[in-house]
Image (cartoon, rainbow, N blue to C red; front, side, top):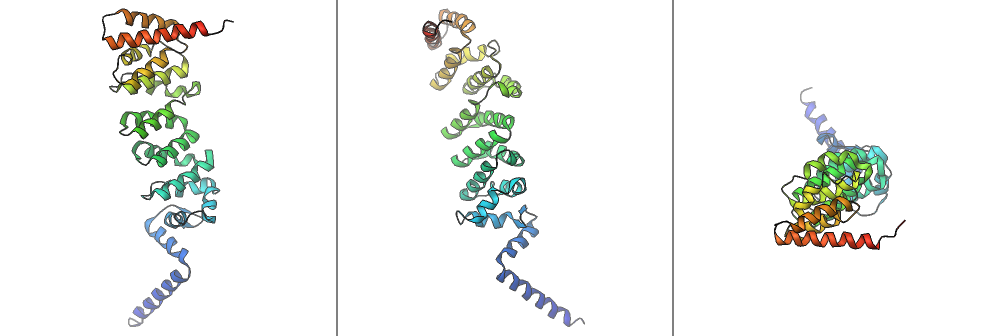
Length: 270
């Protein structure tokens, strides 16, 4: 009996190899079981990654219309090294809409660490669809850590979408008003203003930003001050333009004040 065991073992091994050769999909199932990977329709992420690399196929349609059941696999694929796999996985999640909410943690991680522009843009877009609060907080953190023009633009685009419905973002935005990065402070002030139209909390940060040598910072501050907070902003800007401050701060304040006055004159009376 002991002599027959190796023979049965060899036969089983050969049969297994034959099955893998005749049915390639079984190879992926075996790999998936060994790696404890996510699966969809009985096939692990590695199978779908290989399918996505082949371009438009029926497999891609299956993923895009797979609903919540396909989200774990797509979330795993979104973290692959190959850009083509990640982009296709994210496009599939984008098509799903709210059903892709299960991928929010992965999308938030991509938003904070991704360097590929198309992947970063898609992660932000999908996160805005499935979890606006996470998207806003993620964009705020991205702005703080941004090291490239594209990552900063991506963060600014997300934060520019903040509106009255995003009241949950008031607290983190208020904290960001004291950030050491003046651009973060200016953007946070503008975003916070869009939520509840309260001028008092944001004025100190905007006033500090007006005198910045960074044109982008001063423009953000000036744009916010020249909107609907005219009464409070005008008083603050008049004070700044007359105080003994850095010339650039007085100049920026005077420019913003002139813009407010010009807009007030051209606004139709009711």
